[in-house]
Length: 268
Ligand SMILES: [Zn+2]
Image (cartoon, rainbow, N blue to C red; front, side, top):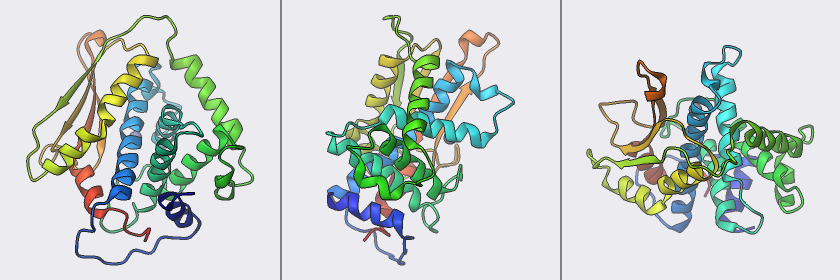
């Protein structure tokens, strides 16, 4: 197991200890992989909300609590991002997404609490392990032995296949990408997001597998003063005619900036 992975696996097994560090830690390759993995997971989680709304109309299902929807969006992200056993970069990014949740309880990283962050971390590991328990045997010790991760993975994969994926060979609406010029000192975060390719990958992945019926945008921007700035969002802008509804994922540079500055604190 490489260094990044073993640090995060160790942290999942034992609570993180956060040391007050006034200075911004150095940005090295491990930090960049870590932040990219977390940012990618959150962007794909919002895509889960988008597809639930646009394709299956699940966001208005009265039988679902908001916690159910968040859990489903996490699982959706995991299916879309599930790395092959021979894709070390993909595995590192998924492990980083799990590790990112472990930092959420600290005083510096704030987050809209969907599920308890530690649980979200373990759920990610469970689905990754469940996708291929032989290849991912290293992660067996992190998984609750009473949970059948393989069955959970298969059930979600099948459901996305049956309810969401499109095999008609036709392409739906293409996704519009907007990078709003950064303000408020968010230049680094903006550049990091562009260099990461996360937004372009997400557009390509959705367009390849799903048939979008509506106008859909991914916008990256400085959110300070316009929205809660330290997270990502999904919104539907409704029109009189539902066919004209506009589905929008917003990625706030501030969330990326905070993660880059916080780095891998707690994993040292
Ligand atoms: Zn969510």
